[in-house]
Image (cartoon, rainbow, N blue to C red):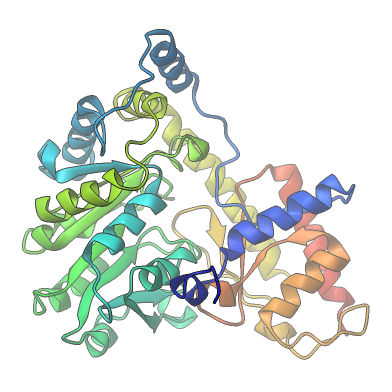
Length: 399
């Protein structure tokens, strides 16, 4: 009899974390690896946020807090939703967890029964399907191809909804593609979901503040007819460069928020008290640096997209947000690398790229769409210039 549970056998380790770890190991071994797999900003946490954490430590704010968030942080989150999204919530509609991933995991565990279906548009963030599986649900993958800008076609969506559908997960701006849903896009999707009142919507808005060229962010909870069926997840990781602080939050129906608190009470209990104090300052303090950092990401995006599109065999859309691109490597399939190995898949491509050019990226199949790869450009321009040169040289070496 195996000590490992059957449920764990349904899932795989996170591919993005695996790539990042592999890059770290190669660097530690003395290899000049450029890691483009990590999904975190390279900027430091702003000083005012650090100082709030230091003050919390010095003030002895180091004890257990309420299971799903301090009153101060919940109040700051309520104010954030009102100010930035024109959404009204009360503090008993707010939950705080140890990162956005934790919040989504709790939501799936708190709501899914065996066989419940969750529509997951692909390309998807790697953890969505596995979290559904761990909770006993069935991920229903809806492919959204490059011709659609990697976004949901509302007409196609209706074909995926069944009596067993409990959730659909929306992620805008998207990880891994950077695709963003406009207000018009969201309203078209909402028109379909309004007809199916048994379907709840999990809106992953973690990249809300990383958008470009005046793109106006719009979230589906702003559709009044759907708000009572939407759990809106966000956090401080991306906009405030606080990935390691581990604070995510969500707003939604009281019944779901209460169920999430019950799960959390028997698992992690509260998120770090220090991190929560820092998050209050993040949400309530100056926001001036956010646009400046988004402008920097846009400059990097422009460089990377132009560089990739100059390479024969690679095609790359220009995304409206996040800090990823999702280029196609289909034009390189069937070629051989310098070691004589044939590239038959995107996995072959990224492995050969790492072995021959010491560039770490993530294969598109890890995100549910074969023939692509994800690049995170949340690194310095110097690294990006070297990386693009290496990728071009590698592609030109293929025969």
